[in-house]
Each structure stands twice: as C-alpha cells, then as structure tokens.
Image (cartoon, rainbow, N blue to C red; front, side, top):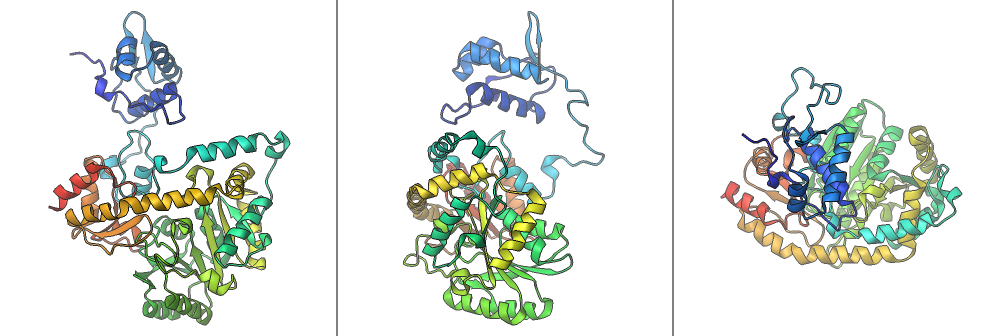
Length: 477
C-alpha cells in the first residue's frame, strides 16, 4: 500500500495573507506532523505533484521541503523523494503519565483558549470573542507601522515610559473626553491589553483570600486569573439593564468585596448595556460597602450611541473617584498590538505604574506609537464606523437564522455577541460541534461557578459560515 500523502491533506494557501507561500506550506505541514496527522515514514507528494496541487512553482515546494528537512520534520532519500521523519523523544516530548487525549480534555476555560488559538487546521469558531481578520484593516496597521519605522532608530531601541507613550496618553485624554470622562495623561497607564490591566488592578487593590465580584455571565478568562491569585471570585447575576441590584447589595454586605468588575457598555456575552438607574445604584453600593468598581469598556468603539442603545458609563458619573476605567484596541483594531490602558485617580495611577514596572518594566513603545499614529490621524474613527456598519448588515439575518435553528435569545440592537439559549446542555453541544470541526463557546465557561448551562455565546461575525447553521439545525432539530 502506498504511503504517499493524499493531495486533499495539502494546505490551503492564501496569497493575500501577508505570509509567504513557503512559510504557509512549512507552517501547515509542520503542524500536521506535530498533531500526528502525518505519521512518521509517510512519503510526501513529489515536487511536481505538490506544486500542481497547490498551484505554486516547483521552486516554492523545493524551498518548503528544504526548510522542513532543516527543522527535522522531513528527510530526503536519494532517488525516492521526501518522507516524514520519525520523531525521537528529543524532538517530541513524551506526554506525562495519565495525559488525556485532546478530545477527552475537560471543557473549561483552557479548552476554549486552546481551540480559539489553534492555527492548523483553522476551523470555524462561531463562539469566538474576536472579529475575523478579514473584518479588520491590516493595511491600516501596516501603514502606521511603516510610518513608525521611518522615525530615528534610537527612538525604537530603549524602554518606553513607565506610564506609557505620552503622545498616546494625550490622545487617550481626548478620547475619554468624548465619553465625558475627564482624565489628564498623568492619570492614564498603558498596559499589554485589558487582561494585564485587570491583573495589575487585582494585584494592587486586593489580596489573596479577599473577594472580587464579577458579572455572571462575564468574560471567562479573568475567573481563572483571579483564582490563581488566591482571590475569592463571586458572580453577580447580570440582567438586561445591568446587575441584579438586590443580589449585589446582599452579597456586598456579606462578603465585603474589594473590587467589582463590570462591563457597562456592550456586556460580554449578552451585548446589553447598563441603564442610568442601575449605574447610580452600583455607585451607591460601592460607596456604602467601600469597594472599587472596575469598568471594562473594551467594546467601547463598537457601541453606536445612546440613540440606538441607551448606555451609561460609570466613569462618566463618578469621574474616576471610585471607578477604575479600562479600555483597549485588541478587539477593534489588532489583537497583536496588545495595547490597553487604565484611567484612574492620580494616586491609583502612580501605584499601578509602580506595579507595572515591577511586572514588566514598561510596555512596548513601538505598539503604542502605532496606535497613536492611527488615532491621531483620524483613521480609527472611520475604521470603527465601518465595523459597526458591517455588524449591522449581518445582524438581522443572523438573528433570523438563529431563531430558525431553534435558539432563543433577546436580540440586542448593537454589539457583536448573541447570548443564546439552546434548550440543552451546551457543553455536550460543544463536544458534538468540535467533532464536526466547529468551536462553540458553552455558557458554563462564562460563569465563575462553571455549572452546566443551556446558554452559549455566538459571534455575529463568525457565524456567517453556513456550516454553523447546518450543524445547529441538525443538533437542535
């Protein structure tokens, strides 16, 4: 029996990805070998066969195979061709005793992260928390990078400022003023995305054994991060206009939390926003029980304004006295830039800048210069408008398909997420979806209790693949 690799196993190439064809071939085939999809000893397609299947030149295939040989993935046998090299334990570490098969791993936060970030094979992720690359503007980021690279090299070689690139912080002052939040640059600290901002705030203002409140449901990654610090994480039920105030008051009196982390605008995963009445009540309880409110506004620029969906920002009411405001550009501009920020009182800003220096010294000045360039040229505002328009274009059609598939939900007029009720355990549904090459985000992951749920998060941008609706129609029919 021939061991020649069948042509359908060859990677799909993109000539618009910005990655060379050689690097795409190498990355994809190396991942197939690592994942044991290509076994040791299997013969690779000939140079001509591979070139014809991929519609590339023979020279491209030769260069790709040579790189794979150099990295220990293939071996060349004179007169016979190229073969998958048997990997020794030195190349591939043996799994620890009792290691589980990937398919049998528990469906927890780590499971979702791994599947979100898997590169090969790329599979549809209707539960993803990110916009697809084709929805974003790579050329916009590339032009800003080129502009930054033309600056004197000495500016790009040292550490940045501890609080962050000053011109960016000045630009953020203008952005916050547009949200009716008065915040001079010295009260802003830049971070490596909002997750580092949450990490810094939690480490500085809470201690192991103390309590942090979060919305339930909410952004799942922070549950594990806070728990790893030794914090006690408690969920506050999230309703259509904000938290359940009665439960918040009861639990605040009982647990005396240090922090309450909340999405006021375009809550993840429901795309709901905080009402003015609820905002005043949250601040009143924060004052009464002496806890800080951490307002995560990462989806700020996807909100179309109060005329479409009423929304109240806690920082605008409080003016950063008891509210610590977090923002960033990973969701709307480019996750790879990893630029976020904290806006807070002068005293807390200094404490957080010191905490940041102890953790990472400074953040990347280059990434912050790129974001500054995009903001200061007025390009980001237009980019955000295009994103909102594109989400609006697919919103109603996606809602109809979700209803036809048997999902129940409260349609939101803005945002990128649908918090859908499937009427069954979505952990089991996600397992079935993964077997068919789809990554769902089951509702259990969005609660700090991690209990089975009939809910799941859908992303309006990533559900446009018809395979998603075909699967849901079969699974829920």
